[in-house]
Length: 268
Image (cartoon, rainbow, N blue to C red; front, side):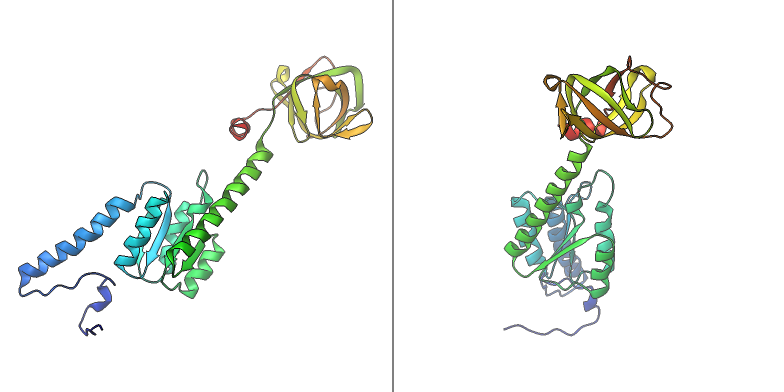
């Protein structure tokens, strides 16, 4: 059984906070300090506003603390918390986790036993913010961990397209079958591995960018890669139409893959 309280200023009350009977101003201040102390303890232990993390919302202080403790044990970082329904302003907080070098899974609100206002949900969907709702902590956790895996798999897929394997090529003398884009030349791998999609350059010509390998033909058959042991092959390079074989480079030029910091990181 509970009691119903009617009083001015209840819109500022926190669900789940303790009730104190105060006889004077001094006791009121002591009660306020106690409640604020409980909230500060929660924030100090579970929330790090300086790092990436999810936003957590719950219906009461008790349910918030229970969820935060669970996330803490599961090593899921939290950057912001709130009590009550999810509003547009809460989505705006989550949008800070969108950007370069930020993990997409942290642009997320975990709403435990609270409503998500329709305008907030629409705003979240428009801006790529995930909002997970549940009345059971484990269901919320399962939904989020599944999403984390999706984001991780997507990153691996994206990094795979950035990965450039190092290689050094030597042109077969006189083996140029098309001088302009797409340039088609005969090459042999001296070191490393040449793959379709590899960007190529000529280091001796100030890093002249030739373009990306569009196809490899080995022994009159298409191949996905080429190594030194495979011998020579015809390579189609799609790139800048202004680059011309014979004018900008020739069969005496050493050709290598174009390596960037991103491609090095993707190989790690």
